[in-house]
Image (cartoon, rainbow, N blue to C red; front, side):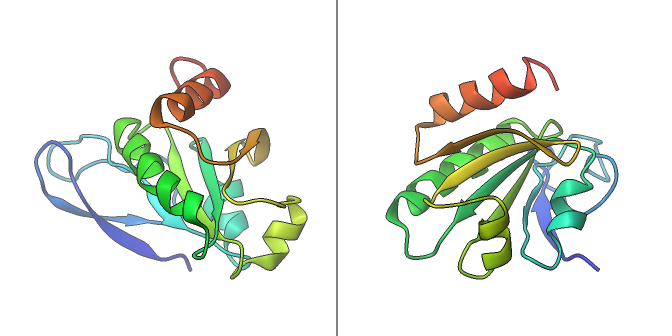
Length: 145
């Protein structure tokens, strides 16, 4: 069973429980606004959290010791808020998920992937600015997802 987190609605402020894995797209229980979807995944639950997602997933392969990872992480979280209802952000700590790192050939962190329908649609390594990452996501998914 996957974990969940409590997310505050960006419109009305209500706290909503958002599971790491679920069908559909999370919305606020009060006002119906799309909620940012940010989750963690590892070797044991990646298939459920990422590959089975009905929403395109931006996967952030990162490590705690990685300086550029600490720079790009808040940028990705901001994009998850801006693109609420359109994407899901899933963070994978490569030190805690070595099988996934090997499976996807992760040789540098951060490495970002966009997965649609369980398949890798795009991949890039290294940190980038918010506008560059937003353009990469929009280009990969099209202007509207």
